[in-house]
View: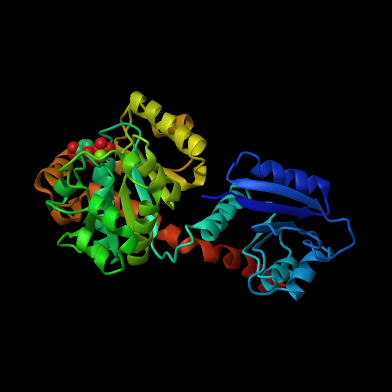
Amino acid sequence: MAKLRVLIASHSELATDHLTRCLADHREFLVTTRLLNNGHADPLHGIGEAPDLLLLHHDTGRPELQYLADHSQRGQVPLVVCGPDDEPDGMRLAMQAGARDYLPGSAPESDLVSCLVRIQEETFRNGTSRTGRLIAVMNGKGGSGASFLATNLAHGLVVDAKKQVTLVDLDLQFGGLCRYLDISPDIGLLQALEAAKQMDDVSVDAYTCEHSSGLRLLAAPSTHITQPDEIPIDELDALLKVLLANNDYLVVDAPNRLNTVTDFFLERADQIILVVQQSLPNIQDAARMLQLLTGELAIPKTRVRVVVNRFTKNSLLELGDIRKALRQDDLITIPNQYKLAAESINSGIPVADISKSALLTKGIRELQAVFEARAEEPAQNFLARALPNILRS
Ligand SMILES: Nc1ncnc2c1ncn2[C@@H]1O[C@H](COP(=O)(O)OP(=O)(O)O)[C@@H](O)[C@H]1O
Ligand SMILES: [Mg+2]
C-alpha cells in the first residue's frame, strides 16, 4: 500500500517534535512538518502539493482550527486534530472542520497510529469500490491451527453473524480447506485468476463452491503445479476487487511461506490473525514471522492479532511469557479440545455444526466477535468521545 503523506502542523516546536517522534517508527507514513508562524490562519497556506492528511496540533485560542471550520468543504485534505483534553470548543470546531478524529493530549500514542492507519486504508485501498473486509489467517509454524481456525471463523461469520463470506485457500499445492468443509471443487482460484479481468459480480460465483451453510470456498484444486511467482499482480488485483465487492468478509488462509501471492493478500488485509501454540519453538517462529510482517512487508503492528490456539492454563509457557516474547499486549485464546477438532476435520463438518455449546465453539465465536466489533469501530470513536464534552459545555 502507498505511504500516507502526513503533514504535522503546529505553532509549537515541542508539539511538532513530539508528534514526529510518535510516528518515527512507522515507515508507512511519510511525515513532513510545518511550524505555523507565518501569520496565516490557513495551516495549508502556500503549500505546493497537498498532503494526504493534515495532522493539526491545536491549542486554545489559536486561529487555525476556526479557519478550517469556517472553510470546510467536500474534497478537502483529511484532517486529524490533536488538542487539549476537555476542550469542548476545540472538539466542536474540529467537528465543524470535518475532522476525522480529535485526539486529546492524554490519548496514548497507539490511538494516533491506529487513526492514521485507518485513514491510510481508506485512502489507498486499491482504489476499489470495496465493501468487504479482508482477514488473513496464518501461522508462524505449521500445525498451529491456522487452516482450522480460518475455516471455522469464516463459517461462524456466515452462520451466526449472517454475513456473506468467501474463504480463500492460498495454498496452491496442498490446499486442504476443501476437506475441512467436505467439498471437492474441480475449478477454483487459478481459473478465477485467469478470468479475473473480465469478471463481473455474478461470474465470480462460478469459481467458488458453496457449503451447505452458505459459506463460499475459493480453492486451488491441485491438478498441476503453479508457482506463485507466475501469477501476475494485476490478475490478483482484479480478483480481489470482485471478491471484496461481493462479500462482507474475505477470510484468507495464508501459507507461512511468504511469496508474491501471500504478500499481496497480507499487505492488503484489514486484519492478520497470527495463530500460535504454547511451545517455545512455536513462539520463536511466530516472533520471526511478526518481524517479517512488520519489517519486510511494513505492515502496521496494529493490524496483526495473535491468537494462542490450543490454550491450556497449565502449560509451562504462560500467556505473560508469550505477551513479552511477541510484544503483544492483547492475546486471544482458543481452548484445546483435541477430540472435537479432530472429529471436525475428519468428517469435514465445522465445529459449530457438531456442538454449539463446546468450549472450542465458544472460543471461535469470541474470535468472531473481535472482528465484528472492529468493523463497527472507526466512525464512532470521535463522536463518542467528543459528545459528552460538548454537551457538558
Ligand atoms: N483448538 C484446538 N484444539 C485441539 N486441536 C486443534 C485445535 N485447533 C487445531 N487443532 C488441530 O491441529 C491440527 C493442525 O491444524 P491446521 O489447521 O491444519 O494447522 P495449520 O494450518 O496451522 O498448519 C489439526 O489436525 C487440528 O485437529
Ligand atoms: Mg494450514
